[in-house]
Image (tube, rainbow, N blue to C red; front, side):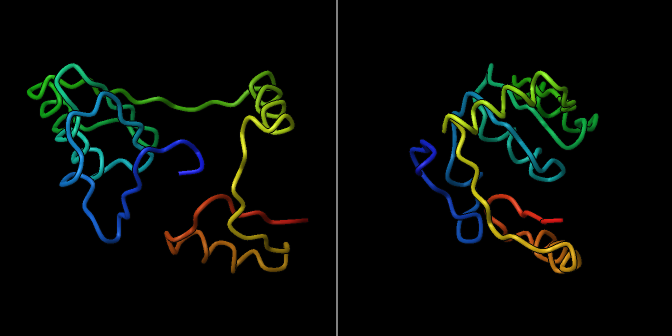
Length: 127
């Protein structure tokens, strides 16, 4: 909510596809089954952008039938973008949330934390 959201949906207690509808745009960071569920909540003429993987032929067919556009974007960082992000971090425009910090010796624990699927924010490993 502190980032400007109007509503919070707890994915452990509610299925987003049963709560949301008539959405203009979805940025899907998960893909797979999640991407397919997103088609049902986006209104005709809306758009879904998938970050982790290109949509399958089946997903594209379902999206086309629903009048929804699905695109895949491969993120490629570059120096100019990193400098822009640095400026946003420095001036407070972007406020990162650090979930937990680990030492380099705790690398295995940091991976286990990420794999739990329960982190909120970033995991930091100090070297």
